[in-house]
Length: 97
Image 1 (cartoon, helix red, strand yellow):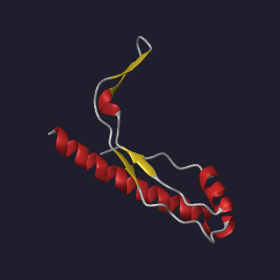
Image 2 (cartoon, one colour; image 1 turned 90 degrees about the vertical axis):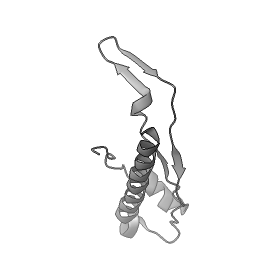
Image 3 (cartoon, helix red, strand yellow; image 1 turned 90 degrees about the horizontal axis):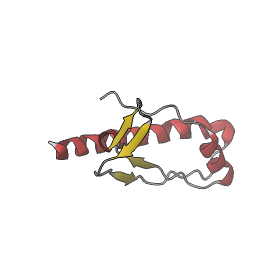
């Protein structure tokens, strides 16, 4: 599978640490099978289908600081989300076969 996430921007993680509130990661399966792009005619449209959504466990930021934890929090969240995404994709692909 060649799908992955782009690098995460730091703003949401910075705000979560500053406010000392948890990050709640939410992962969607790929919508490529139900989303069509006709670039020649500049048309974008959806077909009927399903998308799987998974809410992951909140990640506590209590006691974290920007200086010590921002990068680690971002990387940890991205890894958890990517792992969940790959699991969702495997499950969705098995259902389609």
